[in-house]
Image (cartoon, chains in turn cyan, yellow, blue, red):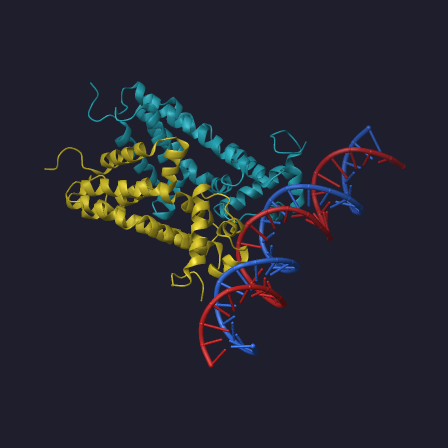
Length: 204
Length: 204
DNA sequence: CATGTCAATTGACACGGTGTCAAGTCACAA
DNA sequence: TTGTGACTTGACACCGTGTCAATTGACATG
């Protein structure tokens, strides 16, 4: 055993590796983190890392799960899921996901960089994005049930658009490249989403 | 001499390399194209490529200029620049750029992949994106001059948003991942832009 | 004809990063 | 005592980029 699955095993070292990876990825925004660096920071030899994770991609993927656990990615969605109206749900989802991005940005970027060359990394990333997409779908669906979804878009297309709006790349571009503070990012995305998806005028 | 600048030199081989690079990058959507492959397709040795381009990044950058020349990136902007109203200008710009993306996608993706690790590639890419941004700025400016820009956004912020909407990544996501046909991409982006940027109701 | 120059060739090599393998150490347990 | 399991060290293979030296062949100029 001793591999990439979430089996219970001597936790000590394994989690020390995950912590190390996480720290380095966050600190460097996901760029230029080698197996050597992670091992060094975990206080073990590079080869020992491979005793726990068969591959760099496997380690990165495991790191995302570790992160989710740490940061409670699930609990964050509660407000969105319990929202009464579609509008509230949309807002709550944008807020939950939008504020999660900066926390996962380092590891996300590293995974994203491997996506083009590494099959496993691609699958893992696409999985995560599929999860996120389900949130979008649910928010759009709630809006639709309230008869608040603009007739300009089918639910499917609206989901595609919201999903794209909320991509990690767009967050990067707006906050890092354009220099927007996080609050403005959240605020603007909420208002854009309302403007795009919510029916104009008051529904009959 | 014989390097990365656009100086005139024995064209034959140099352009054969560029053609080869272009072809491979387009065919593979920018993934997994090595110096060896390019050399082979150009019918020369790998080392000979370095007689013309000092570095892989330099070659990719030169390829973008070659592409622009081939596809007439400048002429494409004429309709946008000569548009009478801000609205027309916005539409024309989205159409011009949006239809240019699929043609540059292969090389764009390759350059984008190097952006994180290669300084020169990063600068080159950011340059191109800055050019594109100027188009966004001009379109928003024209809208503003017509008093058609929604008061929800300052011209600067509107430019940031349009620039982000029109990113290559977003095109990728909508067309490739979501499976949108190109026409729908163009149509939807036009209508989104109107909805986001154009003042609601008729201006007083 | 001799000379030089220039593009290109071949073959070898360094570097950096990932992943593998073999042998050895050290602690803890049956 | 013997094993077992986690870990170490050191060496090595693979890949792709970039470099270097020596050679070839064509073409031009004296």
